Image 1: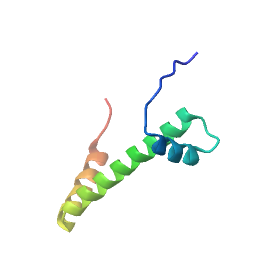
Image 2 (image 1 turned 120 degrees about the vertical axis):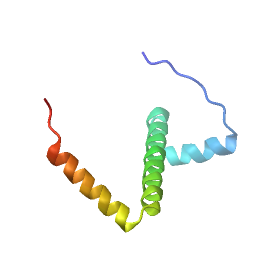
Image 3 (image 1 turned 180 degrees about the vertical axis):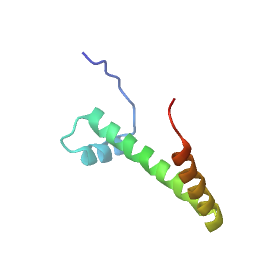
Image 4 (image 1 turned 30 degrees about the vertical axis):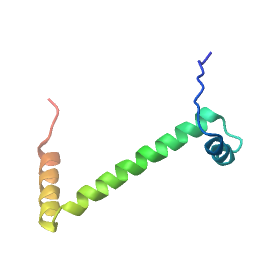
Length: 75
């Protein structure tokens, strides 16, 4: 059997979360929120990193990546 914990939040926050949760279990709902947030952070970090690169940087990275894939082999 799973162990449960109580999380204290303001009533206004709980009301908003209950409305968004609908019929889902709390654990499922919170994991979905966590996964969405993690994915969004990763996408934003990637987009920020790409925005810092010049077209020459991107071209060089693609060339190096292709060369690595062509030469890489497991022994």
